[in-house]
Length: 303
Image (cartoon, rainbow, N blue to C red):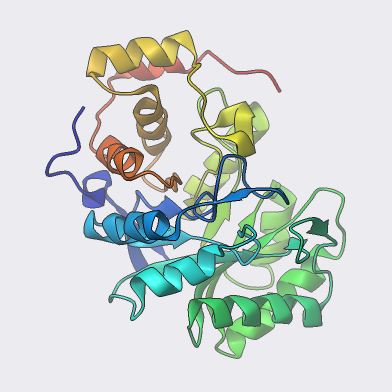
């Protein structure tokens, strides 16, 4: 499948609160480095290459970027690359970020932000790096072993009321987190791991979001169990077979399958390669048949 004359609008649109975005977006995690992301010794990506990918994404109709202040390598920060490449920001561009996780200056993981002051500091750092006076969307990223969820989400709700944040979302959560958050402030999206071969508990969150009109934004939809390492040359035989039938790549089929899971599902594939970017955007126009979806459904990967 060629990307000629195809842009992100082909995937359709969805609302993040009062913001309308194309369902095919872009994730910035891979921009600051090559190879594995979020590791101390990551090799910085060429700055010109990263800037070119961001500008091309917007040219192709991508109007929803996903980023975080903890997306950085020794020389590159995803937020500052976005700022350099795209500011002054075009009308309609939505930038979503996330708070909670933290990395120290060496790139090693540090304790999550667990207090209102720490979360405000992360919000202000995102504002500084992006050159914004407010953030369009902030997702609270949590881990299962963390408590004080309501307190931390409530702190973000206070920043929303103060005008620093426009909309709130959640990342890496379970149904009880969603219910707790909604009792505090509106939730416009949930970012959870999901892709071909999703587990039943992952399907449950997809369903809940659809029933409540909340955007579901999968991460690792391309990489699957390879996660931070990205998509390798290996792939599920069913994915390969559907890809051959459509003249597409396995990665494009994985993206198309994700978007076929409901009109409320967004995709945020990330890449630092212009060719891969165009292929990802082109995947938004792929139409999978019922037979294709049946072939892809019964092939869960290992946990």
